[in-house]
Length: 183
Image 1: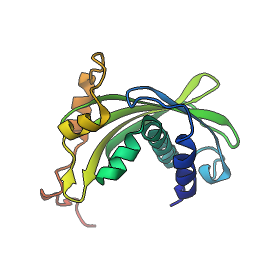
Image 2: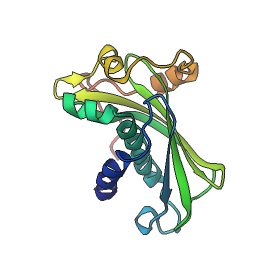
Image 3: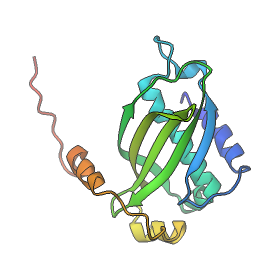
Image 4: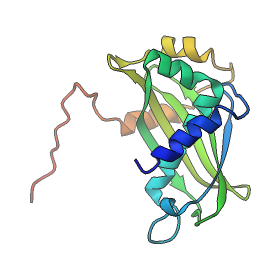
């Protein structure tokens, strides 16, 4: 909810920015606002991932994919994400969110996103997303019909498969009991 108004504003303004293909890199310039920081006066670790949502929306809207997704009743959901931090973004600091798709497989669309300020990477995240409908996940063939074929040189790094396997939880229809001891 804390980014709802910024997301709505972004959906409106991104539609008026230079168009891209979904396979391009998108750059979204922002400034650290008081709602982004924590008690240490820098961007809260959890806020980085929320702000990165804006970067993915920007790419989807500017490429025209967002319009197709909404028309078909598809919604994006994050299946897995990992982030590394190098420096802290400070109140009022300008930065960009750099976003690109690094590959796809039968289970997900994979993004790399970076928070960049003064020409340096402050944080980098890898995000596995799924497109879903009320009936369930959208298949890769359907996604490619809407997105178009990826560039021939877009090859998902091998380590992404290892990361997904190591971090995956069972599917929603498979039991996943909580087995920690009760104290």
